[in-house]
Image (cartoon, rainbow, N blue to C red; front, side, top):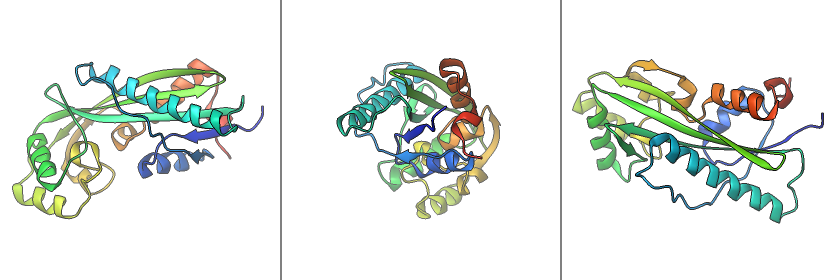
Amino acid sequence: MKKLDIVLASASPRRKEILETLGIPFRILVSDAEENASPELAPEEFVMQTAHEKCKNVVEKLRADGTLTRDTLVIACDTVVVYSGFIIGKPKDEAHAILTLGMLSDSWHSVFSGLAIYYKGRVACRAARTNVKFRDISEREIKAYVDSGEPMGKAGSYAIQMKGGAFVERIEGEFNNVVGLPVAEMLSLLREEFGLELLDVAMY
């Protein structure tokens, strides 16, 4: 089997770190696709549709610059937080982050990720869900956390693998999904749809 040319269609440092931890060699080509998925879609459909658009956009970029080959594998992902049926994106500003964290305090929310993987001419998609329970967080804690700057650019205004993990009381599902890339679903998708195992795509 030839060495795969694995392309991560994301600028997310968290997704980059996860692939590096797995020992998967890859390069990054960021998608600039418009995120046009309707918020009226079910969360699973919303994230899969967005990931699919990101994946297609990067495939077209590779085709245009002549680097798309039979051994190219593109990984795209989109992650959102859902609370009480509503999709919560990244905070617009500090006030928005404070409002979001206050809402999530002492309650459950869900993190949905959509995966889209391109290989040998086709795209396969899958969604993952993880339920997260926050403990009761004081206004003082929320203000200090937002002042740290960590919530900015994060879906749901927190990073579970960093300081935001201190707010988590319980988790049901895959931890990596909350970070931003559902590894178990990704490996399952690679195996079931494309016949690839981790050993096929990782460097050991």
